[in-house]
Image 1 (cartoon, helix red, strand yellow):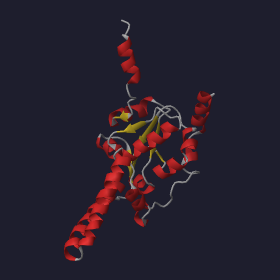
Image 2 (cartoon, one colour):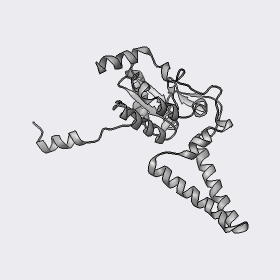
Image 3 (cartoon, one colour):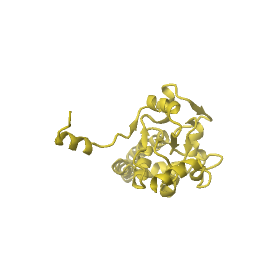
Image 4 (cartoon, rainbow, N blue to C red):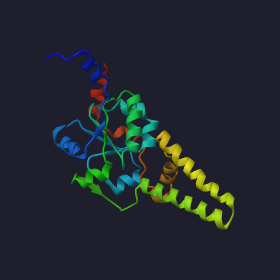
Length: 214
């Protein structure tokens, strides 16, 4: 049966599905040789636990070299982080560079591990998002307690944190997370660089991307 014009218009205007269930990703490892999984968390988080076979390209590095990375990727790309927020930022950036088929793993790396996915575990370390929650909560408590026992002006600290969190949610960014990721305890033995992260992808993927572009 031929679809009606209205149904065709609805299907063509429907947003692309970018969320990927952990179970689906697990199956893709067996079915698709061209699969590339990019972990956009910090190097320390990657060392703590990551999906076997994934590449670590932290979000700041990906943002700096988006065009170069996009030119080396094929058509089946999955982006992962701790919860999906940073992976979604990476998807949007790659989308602006012409990669419109990237997926974001639902539940992040912990979700993949929960279903029995193949992960590599290293040194135990709090994930970045948990550290951000601890820092923000501690500063709010400090502001409230300081405002009562030291000076009412100290309460402005709690207000500033609340404003920052609201801005973070509205813009899907996290300045506090970026600051905490630079702390010594979050530094890995070797931080990814353009050479070790961006240029690590198989040459075959770059050739595929070039042939598609031509």
